Structures are given as C-alpha cells and as structure tokens.
Image (cartoon, rainbow, N blue to C red; front, side):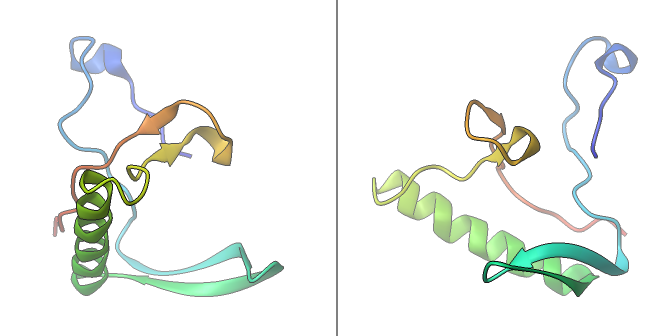
Length: 91
C-alpha cells in the first residue's frame, strides 16, 4: 500500500511518488488466470524498461489508439488514482 501525507507537504501532492523499492522481491499475483508467486527484480534496467513501455503507451494514447495509462484505486474501475508521466531511477 502506498500512502502520502499531504499535510506534511503544505497540502500539496509530492513531485514524485516511490513506485517500487530496489532489490529482489517475491510477489503473489495472477498470471494467465492462475494465482502464483513470481520473483521481481527491481533495478535500473527494470526502471528503463518501464519508462520505454510507458512512452509507447502514451504515444498510442495521444494517437487515439488506446486509453491513457493510469493507476487504479485498489484495482477497481473508476476514477484514476494517478496518471503516470514517467519513471526514473533513484539510487
């Protein structure tokens, strides 16, 4: 879960939101309709891949070929929780 205290930033949203901590993580997820676990490696290369994918999605969205990428509240349809502009690696 990600939470941000706006009261600690003068009532304003932060300029950036941490997405994933660096390292190797085991996650539980649904893959091809089956619940399972996977190891996820979060490093600079992973961030670069996320950024490249996002750029392609934003390009397709601008061309009217797909909806704009967004983050959802608790994986539920509705208003966007956030609309990503980019990913950057922070050592």
